[in-house]
Image (tube, rainbow, N blue to C red; front, side):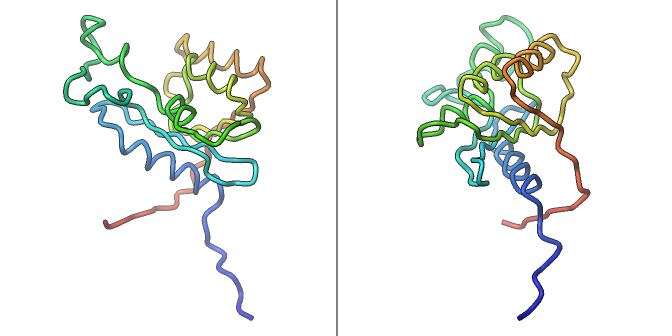
Length: 161
């Protein structure tokens, strides 16, 4: 009997990697966010990334961040967390974990709470001082949703496709 490999990746590395890879599907020229929802027994339930709803062309809707509200992306895009929740077709997400590359906004926090997701593992918290993030954390805490920041291991992953 041989000894098993010891340098395999952790569950957090694995699922955060899936979330980051999902974010790479986003067509947004400025912000690419990915999410991965995982069951309590570490099975991937759903994934999502930020973009426009089905049927809304990536070429016809605006990607701008400023200007007329009807001519920028904010009224039209769906965030990665909400996409992952809506993409799930298996029933309840009660008790699941969410891996996401950017801390969820207040609107996504509402959906996370309502879906029954109990833990959030996030990478970046670059908007931590924004009112939407402060409100998000307030709601998540009140609803008993745990969250913690992903701890980078420094492991480098490369792929050639």
